[in-house]
Length: 110
Image (cartoon, rainbow, N blue to C red; front, top):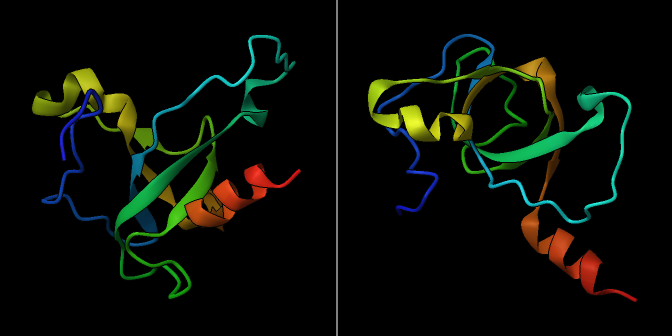
């Protein structure tokens, strides 16, 4: 899997209560969305690895939603240009899990 986002760093392991997320590409749906506080913006990603202290309710491969400012962006030499897609977050920073299939089905409803 390789695109402008690069690929997940399979060699990286999260420790403790942290999770390593490979972030989804953000898409701007509307040019007319305004918010007073950027912390209200959310992003989604896929869990690639998790620390041993993370709850069993989080599984590898699960899609989750986090706040725009959550976690730490990874800037490793070979991923520098795509670093915005690699994030380490603490378990308590996860806002909600979701299934992509459910989201697509919801968007198709009229």
